[in-house]
Length: 189
Image 1: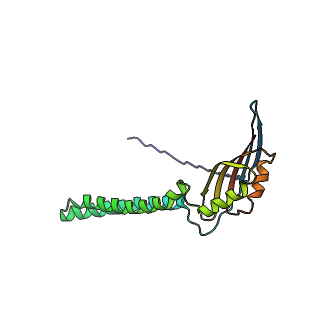
Image 2: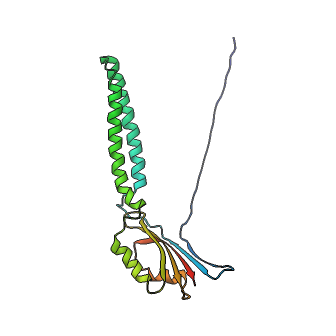
Image 3: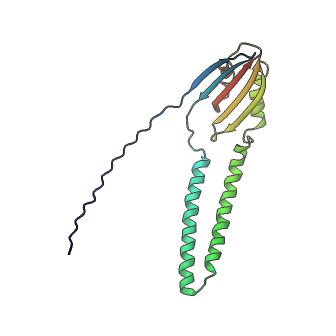
């Protein structure tokens, strides 16, 4: 006869404080042995618009709903199959779940694909940005995409014979208030 007394008292206290600020202004000059000059500028403003649809949040929400739906369908199929002998119901519920999840996934793909393909910004808006830059420099690479409903990001590479800096070009584009994340690279000739 053994008497064992075990006291398992685990007290864990975790405190995580992650505080960081994302307001970056970088202006890098790279002079190398070859005959061109790189000038980079990154501008990040992290304001969040209310009422915009966050695709990541929606995808996570749909993932949780899909897990819940498939669990409920499986439980219903098992219970009904056991008591009524409908062994085929499990396969049917699996197909119903697949169709519903497929429909949700298709809707999410239709909403996010234009963002991934740089097709979510109107051509007139893109042309307006180019019209501001073209008199001052040659635009050799230009990407602009939505990061939320009213916040855009843009990466622009310019070739210029003037001594204008990335900061100068940034000021030219300041009127485009939807561009919150802006990276400009200037290659001087």
